[in-house]
Amino acid sequence: MAQVVIRNIDDDVIERLKAKARANKKSLEQTLRETLIEAARPSRRSLLAKLERIRALTPKRPKAAPLAEEIIREDRDKR
Image (cartoon, rainbow, N blue to C red; front, side, top):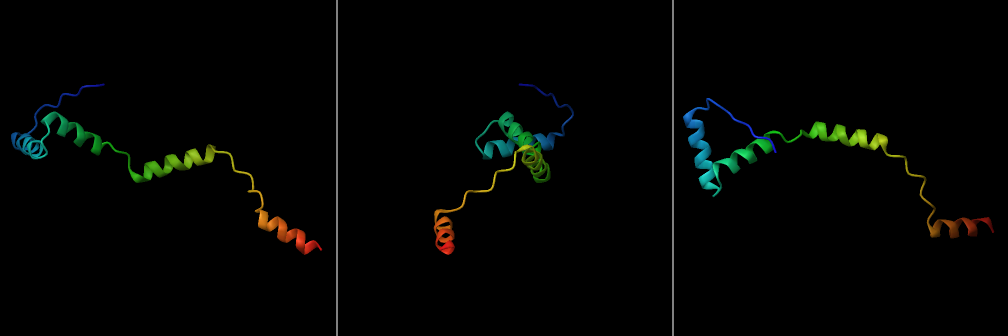
């Protein structure tokens, strides 16, 4: 895993983050990690675009076989 060093963060920002961490009974590091994960989460638009790309690569399904009821009905209609 990578590590990141962020410099020159305002003291009041750090205090708010520490308070948030204490309120959630977590460490500051864990709170920052979760905040970064949430901020980097892909957008709905990019997820939908990825799904469309996958769908385009997926072969089309053949037409479903007829149901037994349809086969019986067709056979009766031929009589």
